[in-house]
View 1 (tube, one colour):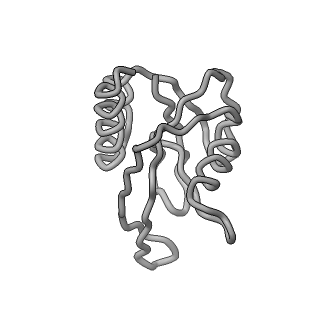
View 2 (cartoon, rainbow, N blue to C red):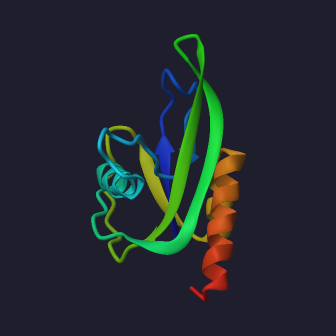
Length: 127
């Protein structure tokens, strides 16, 4: 099962969308520290374990304040036994979904590609 977050419309996003957890690196943080912090802040999940060997990066542009802004995101693959999710104020919902439903639910093509790569990675490992 894959965890998707429902993001509301905002100044950055003109319409609501479904995506994977992500966030910004804070000063002094290592990339993996950011993963643990952002997942905890956005979902309440505290006992995640990252899979060694999976890191997928994407780059995209968005409009904010009349400016075109580039954003680079690194995705890691994690597992947890914790099922209870407590979403942050940044989200309006969440769903745990099997691969095919998660891929269909994701709004953006780049997120679908990350999910596809993650699913193939897990399949190759027999997970």
